Length: 507
Image 1: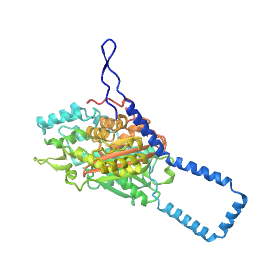
Image 2: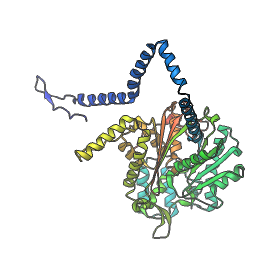
Image 3: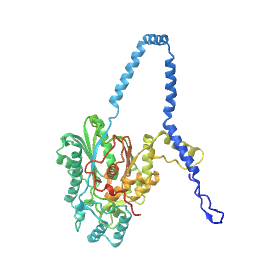
Image 4: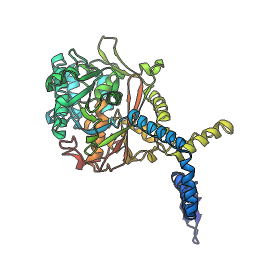
């Protein structure tokens, strides 16, 4: 901990003289921790080097007679050697057959809506007034939310919301879904040169728009996918459903050999705009915007060379057994019978609890042993000696190089930056995605990864942590490892604007 500043002193003329704080204590702790991490990280090196050295020295001292005696001993124990060799070969073969297949992310594409769907704050408020559905208090509330949201002036709303009055019809909702999904998929297929008929698995997630035929069926029809495709349509699972879709595709790829899986993550705004005056249901209007992403996964060894990432871990946390968590993001009708999604005032507390559970599971999988030891020692000390001892917060910056935190809102990003002790650069992709595209629901983590790639920051071997929150209440994490120095793909959503970012977010 940093020591407190020294009190002011006076010089020879009696004038007050301010001295700098004494940082020596904090500097010593910093270097002590660095030394500790280095020793733990290289523990096996320190153990094996002397062992190997002594073995080499002993081997060099063996005489020809000693080697001959060893050979005779092995000849008389031929049965033992055969059993050992057979067991070794069998075990190795069993491991090869049953080990999880590596899952590669070949490429992904984020949908970039056309320019005419931009919505500026002033335009948003003017349209809200002209609908005649909102009273003065609701209009003032929406204005305040917009100003504090962290969104910029270039986010997008669907075509139906640009009409006066708005036209939230089923046909308009289908049109929005088609534009987003097909736009992302067209670009994905173009960039990867994949024949759509080679796709064996299709997973689509969209929470609030689930027509018949399903969104996945719309994709099958559009691209004439093969008749035996394994298709899934996930609905009602909130902003964390993108990670759930990746997990489902991963499980399917473990079963079905030598194939591709496509995951499409989106949300539909057209039929889910709230036209009432309940403030807890007005917030989604101010935050959610048009967006979607398509991801190509493969279990083919031949795709290893061109893949961007390898999937390392997926950790899912569901707090739906708790009533408060279950109802904190809840679609319902208000007193006037108007449908919308209500956000509870306890949302951030519940999200914090879900995050704690999630990282408790994720930590042992990704954190270096040095951090795990520190956490364990602190926990034991707290239990046995002093309950007032603060729990040690593991440094996840030692496990991950890049963070893609769901751009659900400014408060979400602020809380994770604070609780995980991250630096501004670690949440830059999330803040800039929120500013440029708004909350695009489950696809936001892909816009954030695209931002990091467009900045040229992803290097071979680095790890990316995607973390998302969603209704239910859920907190889900996906961990990826870069297979190479990753560059932004053609037609990236940041292609013509990355040089303008990062921008200063007005407080």
